[in-house]
Length: 426
Image (cartoon, rainbow, N blue to C red; front, side, top):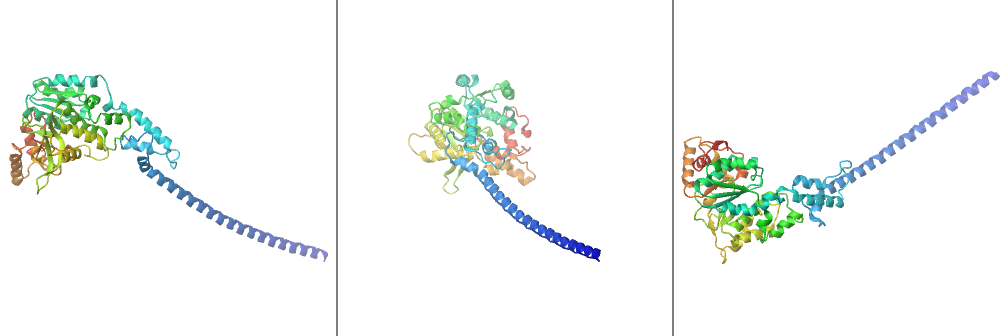
């Protein structure tokens, strides 16, 4: 009996303990569930806040270039090109969300500023020092007309089309002198390119320009020094391209003569032209010019209009707007001074130098496909021959076009070349 009671009490106690343990475990599990859910909520909020902060940082990083452009720094921003400008605002690779510090930007600017004079176009050496003497010696020949071109690319880029443009100068002016202002062409490679013309007795020479000399005592002298020292922003357009716009003005101001782009095919002698610039477009009703171009310039030494062009270039330089320091610049100046005393110059209509607009230049490279095309080609040739001084090929639009046999350009080049090699490969 006693044993039964003991056993009964133990069983009863065991059940109570089991129930208590069960409740404890349930409560514990419920508590853990609550903690887990609460922790998940906290983590989500933290994550969202972190994400929002990251987006804010990203936004600030993306806006950094605009901020850098607007703020005035001790050392002005000198973005040599788009890729180098990006380096200034690149975030550290180990922490892509960190903002660029202003001190880091200044250091990058100082580095570019120190490096700027190393660029070929600013370099001074024995070749640049000999520039003026070489020019005088070259032009001290019996030059029927003295022509100038500029070349800012590598010598290897001076291709067949450029050679044909040079040939057209000598076809119309066998006794002319042509000087190409170019460091790259003033080399063994450049000499080999021009040698076939030299072997035929034509007077052509590539010379490394001396910018400080060319710009001395001109309104652009201080501008050039500021650019060289990093005080001026060259902008996003390659600086060499804008310096080509300035170089043509400066060389004509120093020496006088004719400047031609390397994508201009000469069709008629320039003898007789004096202090002349060409209109690219005219108003259909008034017949007054609406835009001039600087691909062809004919001016005497020290002409006041050239001085005004150089002055405008230096005062209004903008390296981020294509054409601002070239065609639009000469148009602005002529619009202001046209008709004023002391400026004697002539504006020729588009037919003289720019008979075909850049939008329509493609049609001149195509061969005729039927009788109608052939009649159009003949009519165009009749219109161009005799009436115009040359054709600007607008290389920016036509450089990748092949000259097709029987096309207007093909026939014009074949009639106005001297060596006449590889016309239809250009």
